[in-house]
Length: 422
Image 1: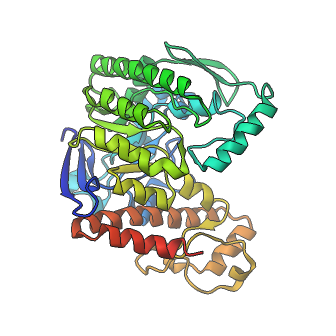
Image 2: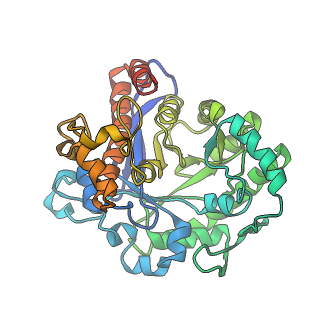
């Protein structure tokens, strides 16, 4: 089946929110959907079967930068794409016919653009995908004090990016064409044009320069994608998404969305680093400009409140490493907010890790999980990661159902009131 997108229901309460289905050659993604991150063709501490059966995910996203460095995109191509390599394949519950069992499930890859940001302009700033304006102000002061202390591992010019490997320091070069070639070898159903992700610390003049460069790179990405044709790894045509930039500036965000919206992309990513207070507004500006009939992906955002605000303002899919990252440090999502399993009170807490009896993690007590973490057992990260990714996956699935039922705002407000009541 070729790539396509259909809108099943638009919200009667929030004009931009919608429930839909992304059809890919390897299966459907029911949107809004959380896309589990498997950076190096693995969801940390989990197997593909666990992500499929215990989490209930419909797609996985891998990182172009990291797979290029290790094991190399040519190795991934020999496996038939990263889905086959990591065992991200259909099981009995995800296929309509026995013939589909064992075939790859839907996948995404990012462009490597965020790594350009984190290794170049943001190195030493401590700036991530999203931060409060107060945090950014503090970091601006700290940056002036630290100026010159950090050697940037990436430098940007109009043709592309030169960077040093985080593994061995060797020098490499990414251009839009190179990013497309790598991503064709990785074989994802959906992948992204090469872009420049800017820091919220960057001045307006640089933000404008960066979106102009991103738009030029988007055109080059499209041209190279068309030249390459179907992925040699999978034999399937891939869907290419353009990436909207523009920082916290409404006019630049809208300009970027209009410019990319006029190009022949299959869908759109919304990239960049956000001020936490303005994230919902920035998403709204962009979604008001993008073509309504194409899917929209918000790159690297995973806080529950941010996800719900983004769904309300028109986002269809998300990805974020947060659920597994915080899980490995003993933090768990619950309907009443995050908890730290290292807290003394959980040592003899006999209540289940998850309230829902249908979840795999319901069979384990918080006491047992606390013991595993304190004993430094690897299983601790597995159980906590399954729980956290399932929590976010179910949150977005429930938001989708609420849109279909016409109760999205009630669902959003009820969830937020309980989760953030502390």
